[in-house]
Image 1 (tube, chains in turn yellow, orange):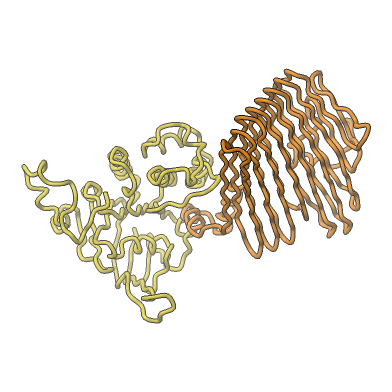
Image 2: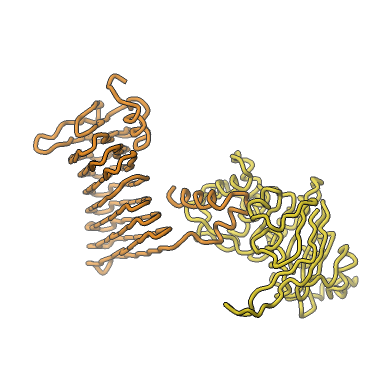
Length: 258
Length: 309
């Protein structure tokens, strides 16, 4: 279980300035085990920052982060990773000379047979065995590197997986497969939790909990069926309107990126 | 092994040429300026030069699937070893050549090895050449390696050269020159790591003389501590040809890197391109690997190992 207690994250309003602005504002939240949570909300609401604070990529100004009762607020990224937190980057880093297979093995923490690697890659729509020997460098397209990023998360299989906008840069065909993969991870029943930062309606519907983040605070939180109507998706849910309504969020405060 | 090699010798040979025991096929092992052991094969003849120190390696036309080993080790401090090795590769061959030099210097006096390698590659032949340079030892004596490589490629020949300088070489000046005939293709890969106060200079001159000849130069280097590196590759296109030069360097500590890739077209049909980049390891790369459980130091090492792989 992940518990955030009165989390605050402030940054200077400009470089060198003593004046600060709050990105995360006294936020408290509990992510239970075996849960699938989508954190959504308007741009600039603090979603990605919150994900980075959980992973340790950013350090909280004040407040506490507890994983399974242990205070991990002061722990490094490495230590949090070793305790079972995983992070799928919105814009993954590229590495000259690093083969896809090597990256998957680092993620898994062990040598992997070709078959396992291919299975991880197939789940993100990279079906050719040639992928294993390709380098994770600038020759890959944005969508390809993003799919490899998700494959590394599958290889790592963390207790708590955080995905920052996994759908960004992924084509529609792969997106279908991706939603299916998230569903499978959740249904695997290993007690693992998933947190997805997303605006994508289909991902939101897939989750069993929604957290709506606005202005660095939780403005709504709860089971999907309860919070969903507050997101402005109600008209889409009216029977008979499915063909006439676009498949995206309606309210202007929550732009889509798909 | 019939020949008396010390554990240091054996370790150096394993590092630079992956040799464990005497290799199969043709080989020539040189230690401290003297021949240790030599073996010719049915298709590859190795002979001592009559004019200069060194050897002539003659590969008969049509030789395929053979490997030649010509490693050099220097364990004696204060020694300057200059050697000329000339390869005559016949037409229609397909052979692999493993060279390299390892210096173990525990003393205060400098040890130096200057290898001048020349390759005459026959028509339609394919060559893979691997050269590793490595230095070790506790002494303050400099470990100096100044290799010169000259390549002459006949019609439709193909040559892949991998030149690696691992750790421990105090100073190096590398000169690599090649002239390519019609349809010839050269792929030159250079990997270099310098540390402490080491210096490395690499000069490359490739002349694309024949129609449809092509060259690809890939240089990747890591400069650590206070080391200084200079890259100076130049591709000259004299016919309808293609050339690509790529220099990438990771810079760390107080190191300095100068990268001056050059292209020169003497023919309007020459298509030449160069790119060069020098930069630190990106913070996002370290962060990514840390999220996969590596420490910051492990992440940095992993990035360097892959970059130079």
